[in-house]
Image (cartoon, rainbow, N blue to C red):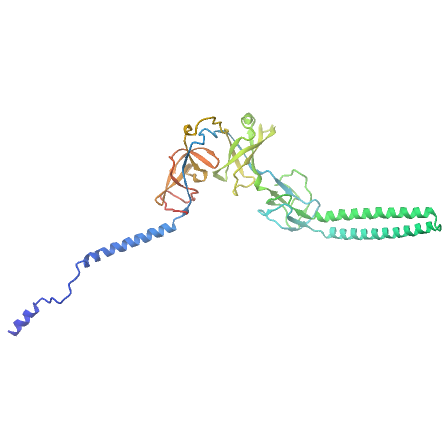
Length: 401
């Protein structure tokens, strides 16, 4: 009987036990999903932080630019040169003792570029100064003798002829002093010539001598690359222009003030705004060409002298007359720096929801830092201002504030 009661007691339900939560299993099932979403968010945040930071521009639509303006007329080849450049040499022959500049050094007008050995010139200056002092002493003595002669003549002790001779000796002493002073000025000028200074502000583009080498005056008009005895070649990079050869048959198509665009082989994606400054009034009979000089208006630090360049001369801006602005044709304009070349195509990079989209465009003429887009954009799009070299379609970017 006792065993039966014990078995029945084991079958009794214990209502004091805590009940398990009905949300336990759903929470356990949702936990991996929450962890996965957190990891995904962290990866996206890390990717966003590592994305390149870019500046953006907005595509504009304008009626102030004529689509036909700036039509190319002809193209000429040439080289980038500085209008103001010089091969700097010493006025006297000597040995280079000090050289203060290197290629790329910026100098101001009057800055010291180099010094020559000046021991012999310093000795000559000291000698000339001593000669001046001796001439001054001799003059003082002759003037004293003249005063004595005048006094004795007044007392009728000395003859008049002796007084006049004393006056002559004073004049000779004065002339000797003037000659010694001139000799001193000459040797001091020679000493100053041992210091070579910059004739104008610019940049040293070539160093042509080293310390210890002998240098000498060179004739004007020498070639920078073959100048012998020179010290440095100096150029004012603020006066860069392009010297190009135009065929004789095409010279009549261009004139002073003609708008142009310049491209250099080293920077094929960059177009520089330019204007024709001068047409040389003589032709080269061996090449049947005429040289023209084109001033670059928006030059930058990437341009270097002696770079090969191409000049595209453009049709001048036509007269708009009295056409109302609302009747002028609308054109799409983008900054020139927003267009890059990829696989021989002109493309831009649109920015949408933090990602870039590569889009080919058909370009028209360039005007004042902007270029007309004939096909590929409608206006209002947001573009990367200066796309990095490694930027590709679909990349994530951060917009610079």
